[in-house]
Amino acid sequence: MAYTPAVPADSPPTGADTAPAYDPDVAYARMQALQAQGQTLAQIAAQLTAEGMPTKQGRPWHKSTVNYLLKTRGR
Image (cartoon, rainbow, N blue to C red; front, side, top):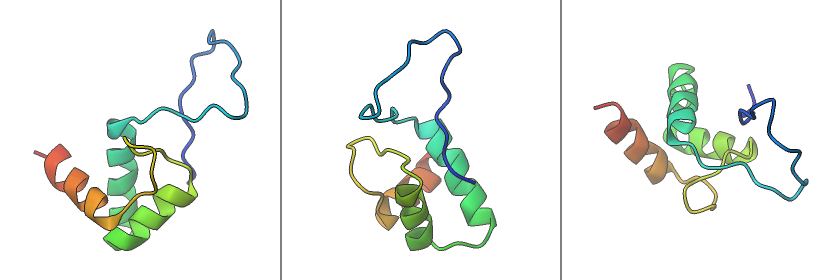
């Protein structure tokens, strides 16, 4: 399942160079789904990056970031 950012129906069209916004709730839900499939933290990070899901800093995902979010968002 690829990441598809939610866009309201009444929002104006955006250019192809506009990156989706970081959404920690969406990222967390995707991480949980991938973890439930048995993927490692490194595999989850690679999958999120491949799907184009943005990080807060706009960098590729790293396994330590995935681990941090999975531990802190679930509290």
